[in-house]
Length: 109
Image (cartoon, rainbow, N blue to C red):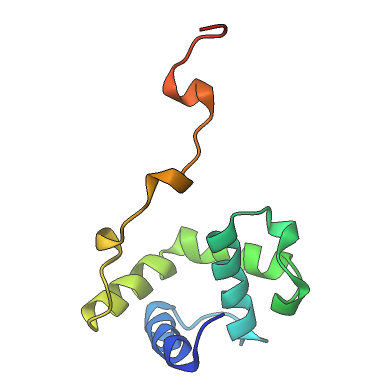
């Protein structure tokens, strides 16, 4: 999913953002790519392909790193290193689906 150059930049940012506590990673790249795959395509965590390891590993990693701010610090580091600012990423509204009730429509209207 990530090129070797992209992984090297992300790995350096993640290493900088983490506290250094905890056990060493097994298949760190595959687990992080599992998180990215799920965020890109949007299915439930249990649908993450087996090539990224057991589905619960990326789900658990995403939750822990979101709660502790690792993702935020890593993306700030990437931004400071000259990578694109996530606030400047464009989102095409044609792919964002909203439920009809989210727009305030009334039943039968």
